[in-house]
Amino acid sequence: MILDFSPVFADWSMLLAGAAVTVEVTAASLVLGCLIGLLVGIGRLNPGRRFIYGLCSAYLLFFRGTPLLVQLFIWFFGLPQFGLMLPAWACGVLGLGMYSGAYVSEIVRGAIESIDKGQNEAARSLGMSGAQSMRKIIIPQAIVRMIPPLGNEFIALIKNSALVSLLTIHDLMHEGQKIISVSYRSLEVYLVIALIYLVMTSATAAALRLIEKRLRAGGMVQ
Image (cartoon, rainbow, N blue to C red):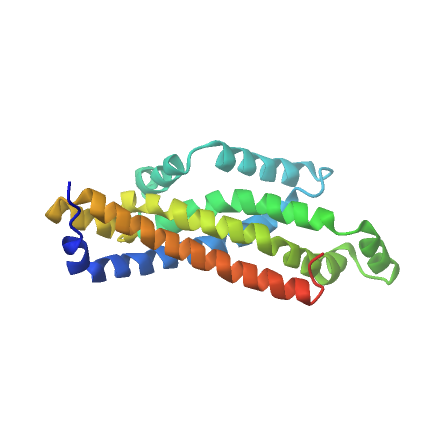
């Protein structure tokens, strides 16, 4: 069998446009996931607040315990049954963001709990409230410790974003499938798609290693 990449190179601009959409969807989903993860992670820090803790735990149980593809289909096919029609792009971002938020919440909770409790006690002794101590002392330090695992989550999101092509979003996978429908060169197209994903994830990993290295050099990461 002889591989023929000429159909891929002929429509190279389509794949680049799809890769740009993949980056946009991934970035928007990560922002949403971080916001949700921060709220859910903090909500799970205090089991004494039963309602908030139970609500956050139920969110975590559902979104970590069900397949991402099923969640995407619920947003895309389920909401219209209630008269709520969202664009495919919004459904993709919501699906990926809510899914990612469950994992980010555990990153947040773990990072906050890793901060020495004595710092919170010292802040309280200076007259800070619990909320002030969390906002000004604990969370800034925890954010630095979140960077490595959040980087892994970002890389995972880039790969998981391939599923949004099933919602008719014109991402990298969707554009690749359009080329296949015309050229019938599926192996060549998927090999190039895999290479583009590899470049995106490798570049992300390299950037994160650089950031972590600089933080370590500055003594901000132990």
